[in-house]
Picture (cartoon, rainbow, N blue to C red):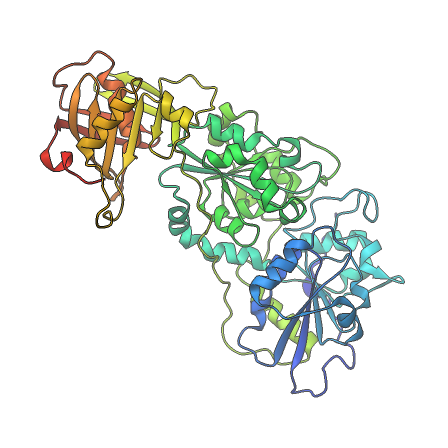
Length: 569
């Protein structure tokens, strides 16, 4: 495919009359959106006008999309001023911004700037426009009476200009390579990886992000049970699983049904990203990405994240596109049980090199866009630097499972612990449950129960258990339970064994590279339970090692201390 350098193709001048009532007056920018995905893309462009009171922004919803519901909600949350479509058509605008060529955009008056919907043009959509033509490059949508209707095609890479020239040559003369403003936000967010992981409660676990596009060939459409399968098969203390869905999936299905369909996985700790901004924060926080043919994986690759391919083939992915080349180099997902081995293979692939044909001009998108957009507005651009904004911290709080099926391995004074959801098909040693929050069946079947101390003291006159009282009560109320644990602090607990007695536990933090991390005391309790065994009586040895996920911690057992016995839960 021939390449066409955008620097050699001048952009047309803005048409007469587009500068409003006076050359120094205000200009109106109309943001024309068909879907939530298109809106999110354009919101990353609008900072090009920041600090300029000469520019007024209005939004309109282009009719005809099945995925416009979330766009309306997002505009409402943002406090944006909107125009009804027919009102927008009657007016003349100083600039029209769009991120999809579909719909009646050609009816809008004024200079028009068109951006890609996502990371390039990697797929074709069945039953829309011309067969086997990349979505976003179809002359059926880019031309009006045989002529281009957009005055600017703001693209992310020269490869996209070449594809535009191949499929719709007359429009390529209006193309400019400006980079990708969403990628620039991702790169600006990279230093915040630690706070993002802290907000998600990831800790030292490996965060695996599943990304699914929309439509019949998407990961979620073909493997709807995969999130629950991964959550049930991967040890909870070693892996955290998140799901990033295309905004069209959120719009078309709705949060209610998505939450219902994904209930088993959400109950096991799955993070379901919100469609605006949070998906990007999850890519920054991720350790690896499992993806279908949606272009979200290209953003992950540009960050250097390992990518595992999970696209089962079909007609949508275009051969020799950047996404096709990335998936060709990525190891293939086979099963949840094999994922740890596949991740090791994925770490050997240079994903940044694979994303190089999708993104150019890193860090320059907003300054370049500002120059081109203000030329169409017939205004001098504001002076001063213009930098991409980092994404906010994730706000979604994953659920903490209240019960686990626990597999243990005892070797001398070392105990390995792996915890899974109670519905796992993995062989396990015992069931452990948090009281009073676990479901009744898990609570009644658990060999280990635990309770965490409250952060604040009980109100005046409210009875409260001591650690000694609650552990004795828990064993008395549950004849099948063998170990009750009161978790007092991240490194301190009171453990009562039905056969071995009552002990104070002290758990040393895991130390590595100048940092400390605490193992979950509930996981440590399962390790001690397995180590004591069913027939232990009398005073056990004083310490053991607990390996849980990537953490190894030293655990000390001693006769119960008065302060621990009297600790108020």
